[in-house]
Length: 359
Image 1: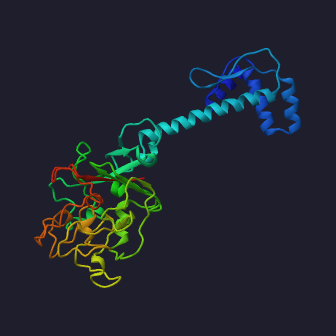
Image 2: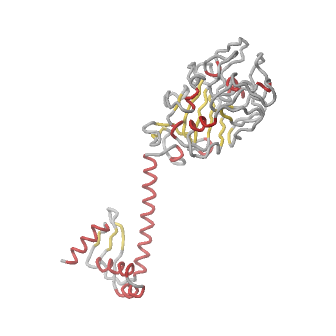
Image 3: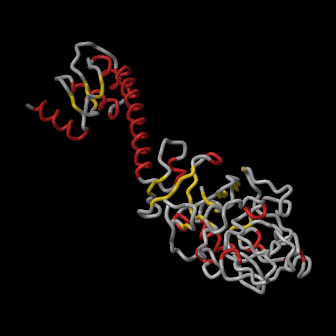
C-alpha cells in the first residue's frame, strides 16, 4: 500500500508513468545520486536492477518492468537521449507558436508560409510578406501609387511619421496603401520594389532595429544633403548610370531642395519642392525653367514617394501635381521610377507604383 501511494505521488509530481514494482527503486537510486555522496550513489547504482526507459503514447517517461540488471550510467544515458527528444519537441513548439503569432515577416523567413499573415505586433492587422527579394522576410509597410488619388501629399506628409492612420487594401496593392506595420514593426533594413518594371533596391542597416520606420522618419527631420552621401544600396537591380539619378543609388529621407546649387554651394531652400519620407537624389526630367540639374533638383518632383511642398511651380497633390508653372516638368515620380525611366504604365491607373518593405 505504501508503495502504491508513493507511485501515485511520483506520477502526480513528475508526470511519469511508472510501470512495475521497480519504479520506486529506480527513483530511489536517482534520488541517491542527487542527494547522497558519490560513494553512496555508486553503491546503489551497482546493485539495483532497473528497467528500460521510453516515452509512452502520451509523451510521458515510462520505466518498463524488467529483470535485467544494468548500471545507473546506462539509465542516465537513456535519460540524456530522451532529453534530446524533449528539447527537439520544445523547439518545434516554439516555432509553431512563432508561426501563430509572428512579430513580423522575418519571423517566418525561410518557411513555407503564405504571403498574408497576422501580426501580434500590429494587433489583428494582416500584412503582406515578401519572401523573394534579398533573402526574404520583408514586411510591407506602404505603397505609393500613381493611381489618380492624392493620398501621399505634403498636407498628409506625417502619414510617414506621427499620423498612425491607415488606408488601402492588401487585395489592391497597386493603389495607395499604408499598413499599421509602418508604426509597429521594428526595422533595420528597407526594400523598395517598383512596378511595373520589377526593379528593386534594398538598403541594410538603415536603422538599429529599435524603432519603426515611422519613428525613424519623424526623428530624421528635414535635411539639406547637397553633396552628402546617403545610405548605400546593398542589393538590387537599380542602376544610376545613364539615368536622371545624380550618379548614385543612395537612399535619403526628408530632403530639402538645392536646385543644383541655384541657392549657392551647399545651400538649400526650405520652401521649394522638398519632400518628406524616402527619396533619391535626381534632376528633373525636362528642360523647364525650374530645372537646375544635380544635386537635389526639386526632390519632391523628381524622386520622392509623393509628399512635395507646393510652391510657385508645384501643386498640392502627390508629387507636386498639378504643374503650376505650365512648363510640363511635374510628372509623378513614384520613387526612383521617373528618374530611371521606369514608369511605363498608364498614368493615373495605378500601374506605376512602389512598394516599401522593412525587415
